[in-house]
Length: 179
Image (cartoon, rainbow, N blue to C red; front, side, top):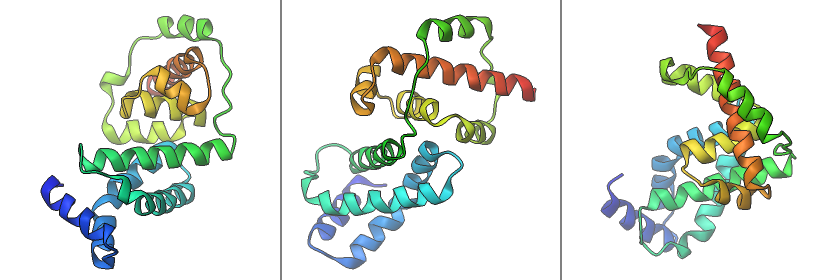
């Protein structure tokens, strides 16, 4: 998205312009739906619900966007937070694994992620257990630190690291089994 035109669109949306709101929705929806799917796994209906809730939040908070930084980055945070709230509501983030066990397993497996295509990786990510998938997405895809993940999910940094390690192990095992 060209940032100048998106900022003009945002300003029109802030004034209640329904055409601008539809246009903004059409521009963002495909990318935000992909984000929602990454967090919701195979559950397309849940991803659609999160997308819808995310847009409700985005439009209701649009007046807080001051034009500083990329609009899409600002919007992504809303959709990530909406997905996390929904997963938390469904207790999908109940996480309990020992970091030392995860480290031990991680050192036993070679890295297999380098030899996989995008589509296959997306399919595997959708199959990850919810807690693993959430931490993996936040850390690897969104670039959150373990401290930020811990704060957002109400878990410890050690648990965040453990979930990431276990997600990688899970992915490596699935890739290894396929090849």
